[in-house]
Image (cartoon, rainbow, N blue to C red):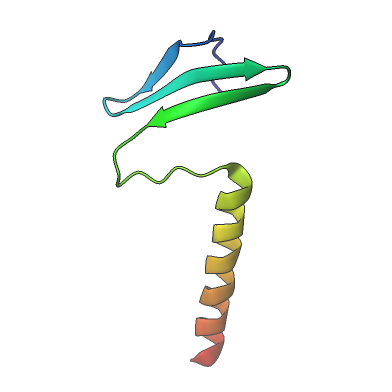
Length: 66
């Protein structure tokens, strides 16, 4: 894992098309702004895991139906 330190208003660039900027730091929370192409999905980890679980469940139901 690459670990980077950034201050407010500083950015991280991923590839040619994704930029992450530190918008605000409050106590132990950091607000990030993410600029990415529309075809790149960006989710919080817990949302991503819920989507994957739902997809896995639908896949299992489809497999059982055959």
